[in-house]
Amino acid sequence: MSDIEVVHVPEAERYEIRVDAKTAGFTEAHPRDDGIVLFPHTVIDDAYEGQGLASKLVTGALDDVRKNGLMIHVTCEYIKHFLGKHPEYVDLVAGPVDGPVSM
Image 1 (tube, rainbow, N blue to C red):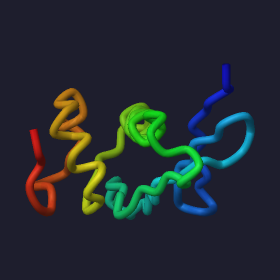
Image 2 (cartoon, helix red, strand yellow; image 1 turned 135 degrees about the vertical axis):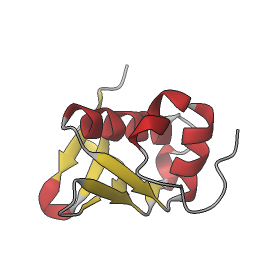
Image 3 (cartoon, rainbow, N blue to C red; image 1 turned 90 degrees about the vertical axis):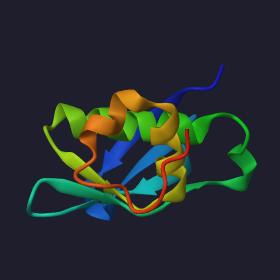
C-alpha cells in the first residue's frame, strides 16, 4: 500500500500530492489579498495517471481552503469538472466559475 499525502507548499503557491514521499502532481493555488485562492491548473505526472490522485489532490486542497476560511476562484478545467461531481464544495466558490461546471 502506497503512502499518499496532500501537502500545501505556500512558497510555491501550490498543493502537491505525494506518493511514497515523491511528488506525483500538483494544483496551483495563488492566494489573493481578498481571501480568495485562484486555482488555474492541476497536473498529475503521467506515471501516476489513472489512480484517482487528481481527485484526492483537489479534495485535500479544498478541505484546506475550507479549514482556513477562504474561498476559491476556479479556471482549472479539472476542478470545474470535480465541482460538478462534488457539490459539497460548491459553497467555496466566490462568484461564478469561469465556464461550465459539468454534472
